[in-house]
Image (cartoon, rainbow, N blue to C red):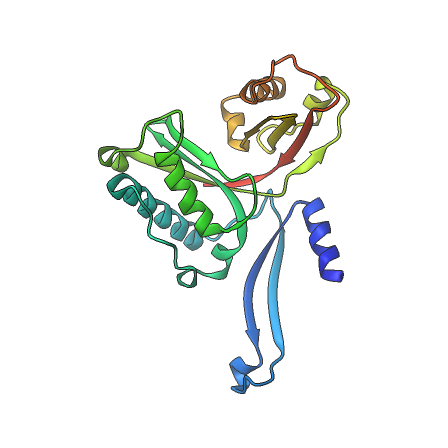
Length: 232
């Protein structure tokens, strides 16, 4: 119960939990018939949390390999999790954005937290390259020109608001990612979209349009969730 409470509170505070190491007394004493287990975990504010440069490099390499396999063979080699350190095996949701000379070439991500981080990145790289309905499948000739951006999403937290003006006031430009839901309509903007839409009202109205809603749409059933993201 204390651990469950800790994890619930961590989600409410937008803390990112990462397993750093797992050991047991058999690792030092040698006898594994009866052991005591130990875990080391980090809780960081997601808005400021970041992987080490080495871990980011491992993810970039995995994404680049997935890109080449997607374009060259139309398939992926399954990820061997034990080849990756524990922080890259944490259960996370991600978005992968592909660009060529600053122009979007694909962007797909996860809305549920179900995969280890490296698996989610590899799968979303493949989907962005081959399954984004806005573009045709990526070609081998395009692969060397692709720039890959990875975003690791935090917990979505509900925003309480009374109307559009109130919601606009609650948004934090360049910090918040935003999810809108109303009935069967849903859309998401990553925090990096603020670079293209720097005004909060403009950001919100474009997201409504992306969700298939009128930019002037207001209703008692519209729900908004904020999240942060580590993007590199």
